[in-house]
Length: 418
Image (cartoon, rainbow, N blue to C red; front, side, top):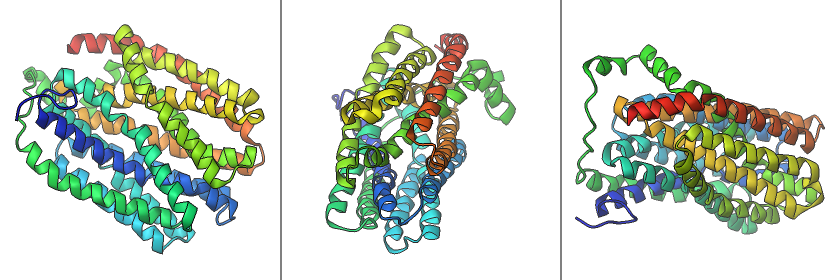
């Protein structure tokens, strides 16, 4: 099959990208549906704010820890089977919540959901590194990042429609069945496509480097020398600002402006529409700076400005609050593309795309989980939203400084790898 599709070199490559896109898109249906249901849980006094935050945090922590191990496994096992297993069990855990939705059951099932969803991202990056050439790798990385805002939009949309007619536990049933359908599509479609695409030939490593990429210590040395070690804290911070802000947006609008659950979700759904532009702004800026670390520093600085506006004036105007949150999440989406997607793809010569991708995504979600739990404690303590916004501002400023600090090391690494 010849000819381009979706801008990729052949129709097979375009179709494979589309399947990867659909697979990762579906994970958001069964990830943010809990966030969509949070105002219902809080407003109906089903659970306390601390319990709600605990369930949210257990997902992030399990997903993050799972990412670390799935990243390592993704460089060694059948990536196609890993992706299907992750989607299938994730969908089943959501469906089970429909039947078992007491706090203990919800906590356990949401933890399982996090573990199984961790099997999807790193293997997808590995597929990109094996079957797509260098030009298409960057395009793949930017294009697949659109799953995040569009998946968020779809998850909130399905949840909104469900909550308009049915109790909150039906949200998990509808989203679980949707992800199950995507799991079957992946299983049937990927086998045929992968068998028809030849792996990209990667320039062979020097003899001394063949063993250098296999062990734990050499991998750590690679992380340190490339500057990725300094990126770790900014990666944790972007995960916190991207996912924690998104998680708490519906609850903020409900408490600050008295909007109902449906109205809060409608307002929240505006964010992904804006966020989808973040990846392409990041791509455009990075083409000028030629450095993912410095590009990230710029977006962290802009997000700090939006957070300051939110801190000072957000409770006075719903429109200004929404614009500020859209600015923050768009900037963090841009950083996510740079640090979580594009950076790991630069490790294709060492055969560590999945390992590095898993490590970086793991830290983002573990940090987000811990800080999201802290956010629930802040709100429960009566400190209020302003204290939470101040914490987010301080984190954004710290990320600017650390991203700038790792810029020289990363510049040297990518110049050597080309």
